[in-house]
Image (cartoon, rainbow, N blue to C red; front, side, top):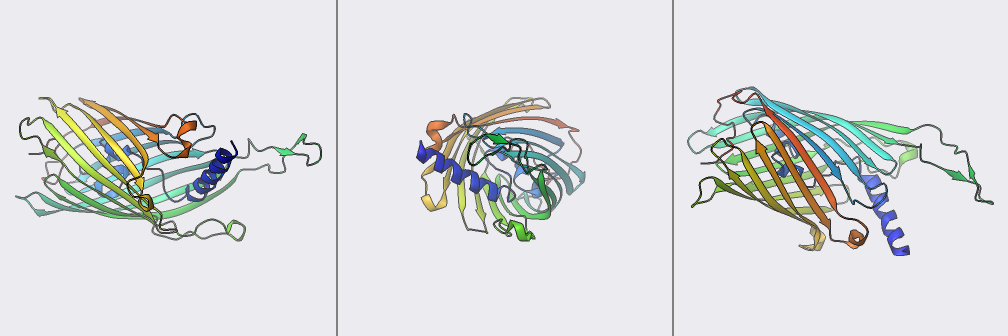
Length: 326
């Protein structure tokens, strides 16, 4: 029991220090929502895409991290797109909320070989707050609860930017993203917080059709993230299967495998994913099993995604991504 308490304390401290660095990315981008990873994906689809995610981490542990987010992006011209996202992230008594506004421009490198280069930028507004409603003070001698001396929520705001680049060649894609490129100004009474918020993300994969069934697609992909403050990093290895019908509706299934790069291929999280798209409606679910010492005390991480695709056919530009690859 003592080992578990110490472990949870360290995890809580680590989460508290890094919460302002970046929202947790588990498998949300695989739920037909690449815009989660990078602003470069804004406006690539041929519709207004809206996705809402609900993520609950380490179910069974009190005050475990919990996150809700909404993403939307659409084309504003033949080769440009905009998007925005809203999120609420709670980890115990720490709460982070914020919004991102994104812009992307897509360049046609070669029309016939379908090579495209995209550039994106996001402006981020983050608010970090400590909820004092659950704080309780005790008399040091008797142990009797007494009124707490902390009576107001402590909060701070941070403005920052993300920048990214995306290359596509038929079914192949490679994106590089730098999140929170500006350092944060640290107040004298918050010296333990990191001032370097920068983290790098690489997302790459290949989508190809089955040679025997043209309505079936496969998509292996890799997601890499590294934090510049302490150089810690992780890698996700993913695989997806899609089956389309004549109306371009589809269902998909897949699996994701995450490991820390200083513990190469030793699993940190692993789990299945599945989803379905019917007409304009999308529904997805992902589950990840925790493979470290915390696995005995929780039932894993659950992610639910619901979405709508509206205004289909907003652009006929060739750099618009088709749902089915030739």
